[in-house]
Length: 617
Image (cartoon, rainbow, N blue to C red):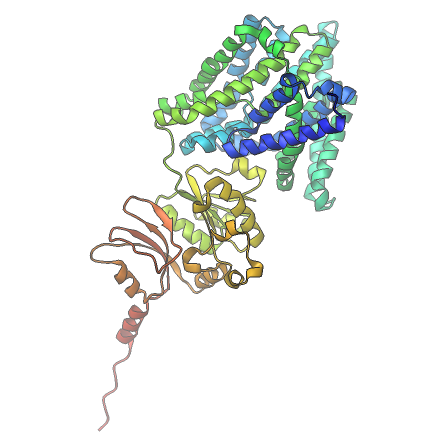
């Protein structure tokens, strides 16, 4: 049956949406479902033939999409991140890249018999992991915090670094292919590098200055940056053949390391862009894969994948861990986790297309080999990482910590009290002054929107399983509540009362959110802030046979509000209703108490009162 092009384009969008939804439901990287959806739509069912649908526009579409992916990824590469996240991360970038590239290149060349050019390109592409596949896996596995941080920051940094290495290798191959002699080839390669670095640096600086000085309105930041980047990409390709990818990568890195450039909205824009454009791109790429090409690789493909997973990764980890405090269990766990992601799939498809045009016959093996590497690492490691973490005893216990929305004074006091009881706590706020004060108090804090794509990558939720909303921003409160209800569940999201609005049915929110309300005996944020302004403090009290809950209530004349209880099994729970609270003798209370208990104040006043004058006679 013949179907229209419009129908096929609509199908791509629907399939991408379904794949993203499935990934969200099962907490697995979306790329696995996108590739599976493309394979079903393409070689399995024959519904989608990208060459037939897009014709001559297929290659430009892939090129522009890869340029966007590389640019967005390079925007996250800050040099301070490399220096600020431990020796292991700093070692992994150069050591892991070299080891993986060498083993990947040699295995592809000697086992599969592809040309040196294709083998070298495969080795460069195979080093890229990326946060889009690492973060969902970490949230499912929940390894110890130090291991989660190593893997997350490796993925963030290696994403643009690996892409840059792959681009440089590709530029070298293309330049060599255009030169009849060594000197001419080196001239073309040098020209490509010069154009890429110079134009990229100038474009990055210029765009950063425009954003920093607000020379264009806020609503044009995302669209303007994207359009300018694509224009720079096209200009660079005109000046030096195939230099555009290098140019946009350098442009993004330059902008990421400029000071006071507002990149938050651009990074958030990546979330919508990935759903619309990048998701569709991977369905198109997977639809071009031929099962015959995979079958032609034979058992040699399995051996190549085994060498990368069982030899290259462990060697990289153990060499990088020299001089660190990691034990053998930590190293073994890190040796198993290295799923490949979006950049590897996109770059391999584009470069294979280009190399085939230049006459490299073995270039057809590049795409199926990289796609099988992605499928194997994501699937196998996602299914086995959790049992391995438990076996090696590197998994975190149950996620009982709190993500606190708000870093205002009362939120900081609550966070400090929980932190003192060894409860994992992360505060998040969009107010820089609040964030700065929280950091000065040695509290872990995230600056930004907790439901953004940037937060999805950078917000460390290791050991966190509850949301506590203590914020005056009602719109943000609702967004965060909806978002984390899906992550943590209804019984692990706690929000304050809206005060008078809760009594007005016209202002009631959706039932799902309303079920989370009523925290701290019905206190609203305004009431909490008012009590904090009156010097109410957060106090931790240990109950015992000598000091019972009744004694506690009597001491503060029923004016104290219990916020949390820590029971005898070290389980901590927020308190919703004081009337139903029945703490036992060995429990610990975290309470909001008045600045001066009434009875003590009376005794103090009596003791400080001047003696009565003797009666006159």
